[in-house]
Amino acid sequence: MECTDDKMDFQVAGEVKYDGDKDDATKVMLTTPEDEVPITLIANQTVGSESQDTACEEATSLASVNIDENSEFTSVLPVEKSETVKSDVDETSGNGEDIVEDSEETSEKSSGIVAPQKTEEELITQKTADSQFESDKVNTDNENDAVTEMDIEKGVEDEETPETDKVAEEYSETEAAGYCYWNYEINSEECNPKCLISTSINEFKKKEGRRKCPTYLKGCKWAPDGSCLLSNADDDSLRLFNIPSSFSSIQDWNSDIPTLESEEWWSTLKVKEGGLVYDYCWYPLMSSMDPVTSCFLTSSSEAPVHLWDAFTGRLRASYQPFNHLEQLMSSYSLAFDSTGENIYCGFEKSIRIFNITRPGKQCVERSMKQSFPGLTQYGLLSSIAVNPSFKSIYAVGSFDKTIGLYCDDGSVICLLQGQLGGVTHMKFSNDGLKLFTGGRKDSRLICWDMRKMGEEYQILDRVVATHQRIYFDVTPNGRYLISGGTDGVVRIWDMLKQDDEPILFKGDTDCVNGISLNPFVPLLATSSGQRHFMEVADDSDEEEMFVKSKSSINRSCDIKLWKVP
Image (cartoon, rainbow, N blue to C red; front, side):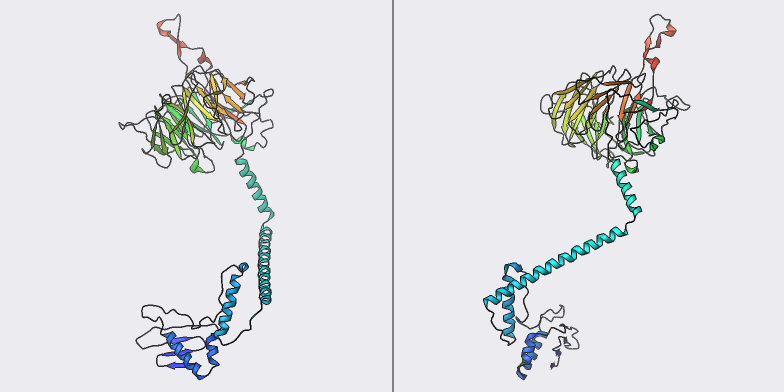
């Protein structure tokens, strides 16, 4: 059936073409699938010639709807209520089926076909059958999805070879071992640490071209990954020692380890500062597998805070603290936060916080002066420690014999008093519940319980007869505390046995000032040495008024590695 007009062609097959005038280039195309013919046109076709005229009029009106030169033609087929309406209503509610039935009845009426009415029993039966059909369909789809996933997993397992499984297993074991701290278990009856290796005799001797010869060391610190050791000496230099290569072949550290006294241990890197080094610390996320993280901080007299590359020894960045007169100040203590993002620098009665990604002058200054009486810290802030578990809390030690606990916003928590000398070193346990502090010319090591602040949880005795900073360290499991002393004796305390005497062994003939435990292997590093002064002779001529002191006879400047059981 066709309807022809001067400006339009219409075909019942579903294609409408609008040619229009020659000047009008607008064309309209409506396509209908071959198996889907409009019901209204079929019904009109059975009526007769009058229906043909009606169809032509409807087609003419359809083609003239929404035609504009600047817009696209949009329309629908002229079949009112002739198609089945699909509802998105939940099938279980039953409302969707009622809508479908009403739409079907309307469609049948528009096509001239009278559908027989269904009884209530038939409707209920039909609803039950439809629900069962949909349920079976969902279960079938779920089963197909499950089978597909099993096939995919099976295919992946088939593709994996035994070599791939072996490599993955070795990688997982290595990765797990990298994050497993050594569980130190020290028996007081059988404890006999063995010295495995010490630095070369010529490491600290005077050489040609050396402006100053080191006479004693000022501490040592293992890297966070345990791969190397950083030390400080009185020649304003820092030296980096790699762990001896012969140790890498050791499979079982619990067995008897051979002594390597014949092997010479030399530093692999030396960094020279411009003045006396006050403090230094490692980047907390340091890993020798990632050169970007291999760096450390130093603070020295009349110089900015420097960030050094641990591989090349080059200066990466400088952080410049200036006072209100634009004068460069020296930082007396350094510490990273646990994320490695912020740098805490201690000055006189103030702390400045630098962002590691922003070298220069930009920093946040926090004064130790508090509005509450009795909570202000005075003097030089000589030590800073950040709580490893409660990252928003850090401790500040001062030469006025006080320890202040602060939040990351600068608010004070409390002020601890108990040291007999200025605080020189502080250390939190790994669980963050205990704080250990030590001072200069103070033989007391105080353990503070963070849950009961203001009370001395435990007091330990060591020998500290000078103003020198004597380091101590805590095992990763928090059970043992190890400290040196000016008498050259290393002491080990078991924190679970408060009344027991410490384990003692001779670390050196001179003062043992540096103590550092390797976190992954049972190695204890010690550094020795102290400043010796000349004594005035009792009966002597003017030429020999000053003589060497008795303590200088046992002078030592050395780093040793001990195997701790």
